[in-house]
View 1 (cartoon, helix red, strand yellow):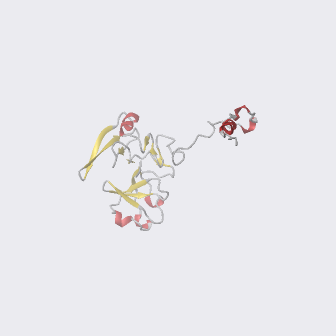
View 2: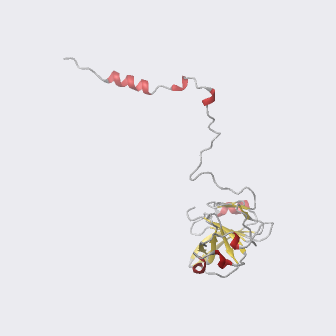
View 3: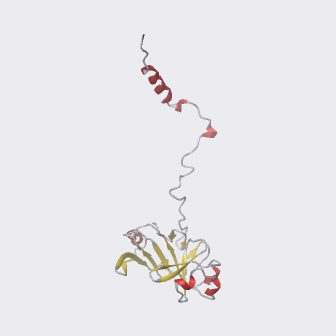
Length: 199
């Protein structure tokens, strides 16, 4: 009995499977330009500010959450490199004095050199929803208030969760969290901020 070798069959399958199909003509209407649709990174396209005074979910003017404090210094040459201390913890920060007045503080809370919290009292900055320093807080809070505490200050979270604001009333986190917005009465916004837990 003669033995049959499978080696030629494997070679033939390899050649058939690995042939380059680029020699076939592709109709012009099906050719796609790879640059026409950039692939999104991570969670989609970043919500970058479109002007130097716009606040979005990830940026405030030229300052972007997740960026290094060194880049804050590069983007704003007048920035002051500093640090904050709380409960024996020390973290880097930069204080910026924009031309329009007020200050912007970029902090690397719970991070080595990554900006995780940016806040300002500058009246020139506006969120995409139209929130500004000096506006009535109840106009921009949800029906039920949500709040967080950062650096011993209580921040109210906007209904879409993209930004934070502080008010001119000395209310505790417990006094705000889950309460109806009418407790804000005529409180004004004194500071705007954005925060990233996992930058």
